[in-house]
Image (cartoon, rainbow, N blue to C red; front, side):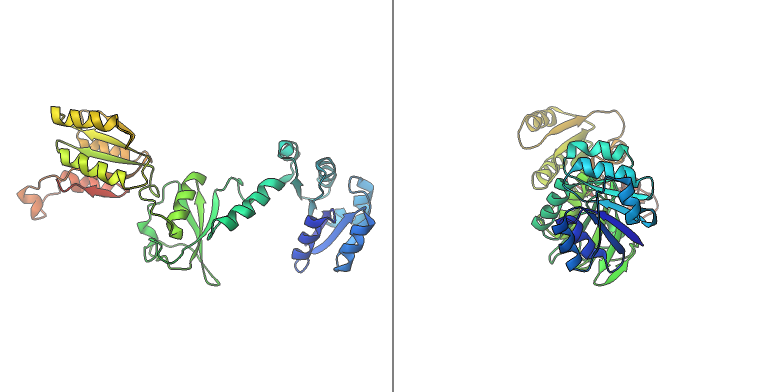
Length: 337
């Protein structure tokens, strides 16, 4: 495979050094001092102005598979890439001024914002064990690699136990081995896990996988849903759980309100401890909870524990709660009442 690079500056030369073992590399450069430096490390250089179609043809652009423009001048990069598009199927350019990104993209050029790329490299160094892809996919942080550190709550868990909504696992690197994710595969210390999904969710999931501070329930959803028929203790337990978790807020379903419950809810929803929304409805609280669990807003549900009849106790008949639990895919905590 052949690649032509415009610019023998730091980026162009570093790129050439990294890929010359696998690619046939040629740099186009006008500055004699830079030409000599590139040649001194074994890189082939053609002297000329990269914004000239004549120069690029003489340099052999018609035989190139990829063209990469790396100069510090966006006008030069854009003009050279527009010419290269006439001859090369894959054209890439560094963009120094991010406000000019649209000009490159609208011309069919794969644009890499210089500032964002450098910032991402630094960010990856700051966040030990987590690496965000630069200019891969949408380039918005929807692809992240995270390392499972000692003490991570993910260690020993099977992939099927990780309810993946808004994200998934693309691959696992274990030592030098690439492992395709299967539901019965257990996460191990040292695994490098490739996560794909919503960037905001991945921030939470990667922290959970890596082994930082507990993120429950945000690896499943941002809020906690409390659903009860008539038990005030279920409310209290749910609020206690929410206050000790990373949940952004609490929503409450309470089927049969009385004065004590109304007073508790009034105090709760005006406090600064939780952000509370009361979901009203005449349907069975368990049915509403099941429907709400499908919205993706909730990371856990606190449910009032129901009394079991004789037939349910001996397994002849399912309780309403058992039926609901089979449908809900996020963690459910049953109140002790």
